[in-house]
Length: 466
Figure (cartoon, rainbow, N blue to C red):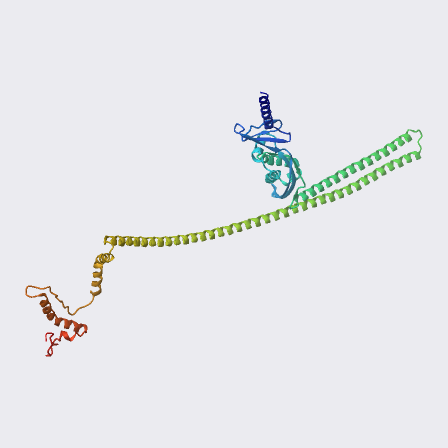
């Protein structure tokens, strides 16, 4: 009984340990991705913070790190809205998003990938979207309104990164340059304008200061002269010297005022010269900048035309190559078709000959069997079958030969008038003249035993009966 209790306790402890091992806790810097049978239409379940229970056999899990990742984008030759190519070196910091729908994208597309693989995918997306963002802005907006530039980058790049479960954390744009030097020209123009403006403002302030100072001095001298004159006038019995002194003081005041006016005029002339010089420098800088811009646009148009011409030549070249390949392929297919036709013809003729020979062999074999395996009888049957053709050939051989005389021999088979032998001898004797005549026509001399025939000139003939 005690042993059963111990066994039951061990089983409970094992079950508890197993269940405890199946409960997975998620750190704050990671995401647990549960896959398998997760319920619903989702392919996975993402857990950030807390924990989740992994059902044995039907579920498993993986981990995605929220650690920030960094990539350097050395973008060169990107075309801006004004058709000016710029280089925008930048550093992007990004990571896996914790937003629920974006986490699902990360689970579906990034689970199991190494950090380098994730950075490579993100870099490709960032590079393409950064080019698109630059194409929507002018060179002035890119160079001067960095806030708008960064907003455009975040809008374009973040949208595409979210599709694979990533989001931008920080963007650091380094120095922006262009191939034509347009940005440098803009900087020089702005600096020249600022310097000219500062010079004008300084000159205006100096002018105001000098004018104020001269006016104050004049008023001071006038007031002093007036006070002294009033003092002298107020005295009873002012003498002539006092009046002269007052007049001298007034003259000195007028002289001081004139000197101040002369100084102001001289300063104004100097200021005008400086303003003209500053304006001249500003206009020269502006003209140089415009000249650089026009040269850059000219070079760009020439490069564009050259590129279009090269593209057209390449297209023509490809057309000729494709046409030549098509003609070669056509000729090859025609040759293959003719070769296949000839091959098929020869195969068909061979099959026909083979079938004829097999049929003849089978017929000969059956004919020998019918003849009780006696080939000479079978040969007679074949000769009988061909006798008509043989006779036809013989007739064709002699049908064009002209005969002067035809002799017919009757062999005879006996009759009631005599024996067969007697009749044969009788017939033979009767046939001797004809035989001699036929032999003479053929240029043949018969044996003496057959006698001689009179040639018609009175000579006697010998007969075989003598």
